[in-house]
Amino acid sequence: MSACSCTWQIKMAKFYQLSREERIEQLQKAGQLNETAARLLRQSPLLPEATAAHLTENQLGQFPLPLGVVHRLRVNGLTREVAIVGEEPSVVAAASNGARMASLGGGVYAQAPQAHLVTAEIVYAGLSKANLQRIDEAHDDLLAVAQRAHPSIVRRGGGVRDIRSIVKEQFTTVLVTVDVQEAMGANIVNTIAEAIADRLDVLLQTRRLFAILSNYSEQLTQASVTIPVAGVATASGNGAAVAARIELASRYAQASTARATTSNKGVMNGVAGAAIALGNDYRALEAGVHAYAGRGQGYAPLTNWRVDGEFLRGTISLPLQLGTVGGAISALPLARVSRELARIECVRDEQEVLAALGLVQNLAALRALVGPGIQAGHMALQAGALAIAAGASGGEVDQLTARLQDSEKTLRNAQRLLQQLRQEEDK
Ligand code: NDP
Image (cartoon, rainbow, N blue to C red; front, side):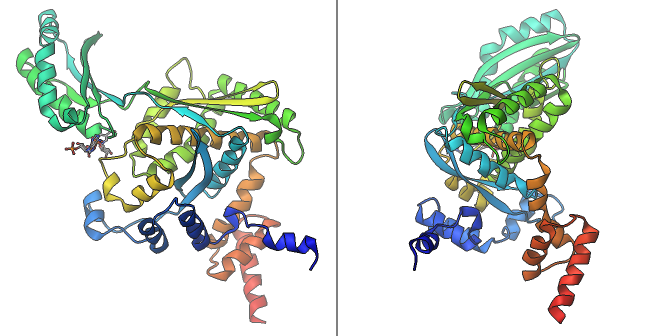
């Protein structure tokens, strides 16, 4: 045997080339999956009936989506496996590619806010001046009501941090800011807000319009990555040229709402999918992120890329309403597995990992966009879904996917190729 073929034999397959079972095994060996988590992933069990029935009204069934993993995303010096739930085949591939590029610069560094704060609005319409003064005078009483409304969050080190009121047009809004610790906090904050509002209604002798948390927040998680420009080179473009084009595309997004919207959609491909895998409320997350992006004169991109000498530097800033406890998180067995895979220890960590994920997802998208274009990679991965839509099953899926690579990627063509494949098999 030649030295050359020997080298070939011991060459390790890439993570994405392994079978599902081999991937689970590899992560188990690396200590990133324990026995129970590995069993759960192997079996992909449905939720227990009682859990499913309690997580939705009028339950008819369950709706499986694949869970993929972004391999080796380095965040704050730790290498993570970040699970993403979603139906768009290119999302995990792109994020893994972004994670690989980021690792060339030592990975992503991210920082979440020190405290995890959520604010509620208690709104009154048409209050008199005397009533406005009553609200100010009741501050300490309202604080005591708030702490009694949710004593367990106070015992955990959280609770109300601020109560103040603002007047705008005919509306008086009492803003109640709560440290929700490890929870996403919607229910905690709503419980506290309604308790304060009940007390205020009596004090002001009028019924509030409503009391509820706001999903808007400027508590930002920030992440940055600095990559040698050579790391973003493509088959047809050298690193410096590609990095310069990435910067230009980033500047364009700052000037164009149309582009910023699509850029942020790409960021959220990974972030929202990971939030689902972690059992979080991705609607709250999306609402908060897009409202933040639209806070200024126009809708702005969440990321920023600049060339600095031999390096490409990217940053992202976004509010991330997440929790590691509460809501459905503990009821969803795979949410725990996702947390373990990503080595997430607390909510700040969770925010930092997801901000990093959004940043590398954006990098991969921009590099493809200013390089070979987005469709080549997308459509190659989309071919599998097309093969299934055309009716392929079992071994046919891989065969038809392969044939579709160099052929027109339409349903009609996929059906034609499948028919051809079956005729060949019959011969
Ligand atoms: P929960 O109501 O489940 O509250 C979290 C609970 O977790 C706490 O009450 C606390 O109970 C427990 N807990 C255990 N350990 C900790 C810890 N270290 N820090 C904090 N809490 C801890 O969930 P949330 O208040 O987080 O609300 C999230 C849910 O609200 C989601 O399902 C979301 O979809 C939903 N929601 C969202 C809305 C929105 O975004 N607009 C509106 C309404 C609901 P204990 O201390 O007693 O153990």
